[in-house]
Amino acid sequence: MPVYKNKDKHWYFVVTVNYKQYKRVKWNGHYMMSKAEAQAAEQEFLKQFIGYNDNPTLLELFKEYVEASKSSLKASTRYNYEKFEKNYLALIQNKKITDLTPGDILIWRNFLSDTDLSIPYKNRLQKIMKNLLEYGSIMYNLNGKLQYSLMQPFKDNDVKELNTKTKYLENEKFKKLIEPLDSKNYYYIVLWTLYYTGLRIGELAALTKNDIKNNYIIVNKDYSRVKGKDIIQAPKNQNSIRKVPLDKATSEMLQEFISNKNKNDIVFHQQSKYLNQQKLRRMISKLQAEAGLDGYEITPHTLRHSYSSNLKMLGYDEYTISKLMGNTPKVAASTYIHTNIDFEEVSEKLKNIG
Image 1: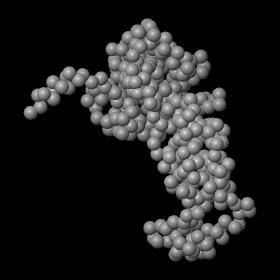
Image 2: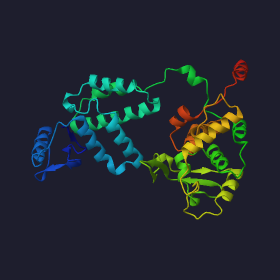
Image 3: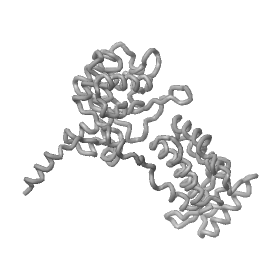
Image 4: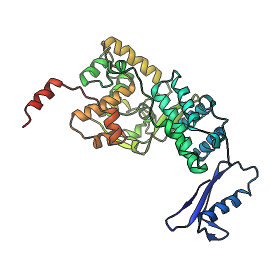
């Protein structure tokens, strides 16, 4: 295993045994002054553990990795790791990590490529494998070249299909979408709030009355359903903790909607249950068909994309948009901002430069 040198030029070692991490900066009461001394101390330290395995299988490494990360994992992430172990690690899980080759990882990636999984889900699985190999490189000096096959994300080759539908819904089209619903209807309020706040669906589902103020919403938690259980957990990342401003119409609508609720009540409970995403998606599909919006790919997340695009068209920069969206400027610019380009207008403006 690797040993390390700190800023004071003292050597130290870090090892994981039985899913527990140990770090030693001193051995026999004094600092380790050379790499060889640290390596010898590490070996001596490991001798006290019966059955210590310095060459685990990839499956054993994965279990160790999950255990080492356990305290910081959300319930939904732990569940995804369980599925990863059960369904997507089997091909190479019994390989000893010292025997792993870049070819093995490429075979695993090709296996993943041939599945019928969605492109985003394939990329999530690839990221888990990449993180596992990075952990192995730190803890067991695993070959860094193993990750080369995982550097490129999966991409959808059907470009034509991707370009036929837009994920940005203009304000006029959104109003047309919800027109059949009464303004006090549960789904009207859900869709309106998603469109005019840009909240993720899990963030919306986790809102309590106490989170909704007169002119802003506090976002500090997320909802997901794992193994049939409703889970309220920390939001997606630190950037996700934020305040989202409310326009007057949205504020008045929400204040009326929550007026009879207690401060800690979940706002969008329906029949004593959390917001049902499947029912919401079915409602959107029904409304989309009625509105004749065939050229759009409308999901709850489309409304989040639309929020960021509307902000951009109002003149806000990527930094401000990212703060309101709960992500980074890079993600806001590359993922969420969509605009309809008037090429004739652009050409006209280019002609007049200078």
